Length: 337
Image: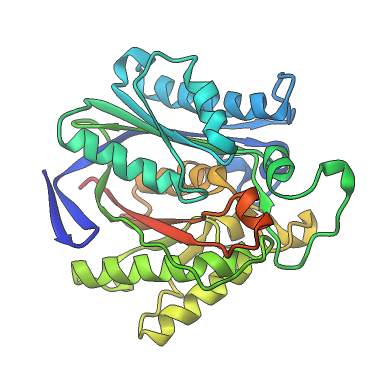
C-alpha cells in the first residue's frame, strides 16, 4: 500500500507498473524536434470530424486504442480510466469516453492533468480497486484558441511570452503485475499564485508551483537532483523554465543538469514560430509517452521525476481580471530492476 512520507507526498511499498503507453500528435508537433518519437502523427487537424472539439476526442480515443493494442488488452480489461482536457466541462474527455464502457473519472488540472491522472490511477491500482487503470489527456490548438484567446480568423499578434497549445494526446496503462517501468510515488501539488494576470505568460505563473512541488518531494524523500536522470516539467516553456531554475537555485537546489521541459522540447521556436514553446494537457502527456517512457523502457535512463504544471484559470476568471493560480503534481517513475 502507499506510504505517507509527508503532507501530500507518498511512495508505494510495491511500485505500480506501467504496462504500456502511446502518443498521438498533430502535424505541427510531428514536424518538431521530437517528431520521430510519437506513435502517430495526424496531418488533418479535424481528424476526419466536423469540429475541432470532436477531433480532440478522437485524439484521446486513438491514444487509448494504441496503448491497449501494445498491451494486448481490450477496453473490457480496463477497470478505471482517468481522463482530462482543457475544454469547458472536460467535454473532450467525456465525449471520447462515451465510446468506451469503462468507469470514468474526469479530471481538470489544466496542463498538470496527466500527472494528476497518473497519481490517481496509480493509487487506485495499488489499493486493489483496479487490476488495470489508464490515464489519458489531450489538447488541441484550435479548441484552446477558441476558448481562451481569440477566434483564429482574428489574426491577433502573439506576445513573446506566449506558448502554442499542442494538438496531442498521451495515454498510459497501469498494471499491478506487468511492466518494465514503475510508479514509485508522487507529490500532490499546492496552489501557487504570484498575482500574474497575463494569459500569455503562463510559464511565469506556473514556475513557482513546479518549484514548490519539486523541492517538497526532494526534501521529503531525502534525495537530491543527482539521484535522477531527468526532472521533467510539463510545459513551463522557455521563460518559465528559466524562472524555475532561478527559484530553486535561491533555495540551494540546482536542477539545471537534470531539468527538461516538455513545452520547450516539442517545438523548434525559431523555425516553427512558437515563441516560448508548447503547452496544453497533450503536451506533457505526449512527450512523456513519446520520449521519456521509451527511454526508461530501453534502459537508457532509470529514474525520472515528471512534474506537470497547470494554470488553473478560465475564460470567465480572466474576463473578471483574476490572477492565475497554478499547480504542479509530481510522479516518480523508475525503470524496473
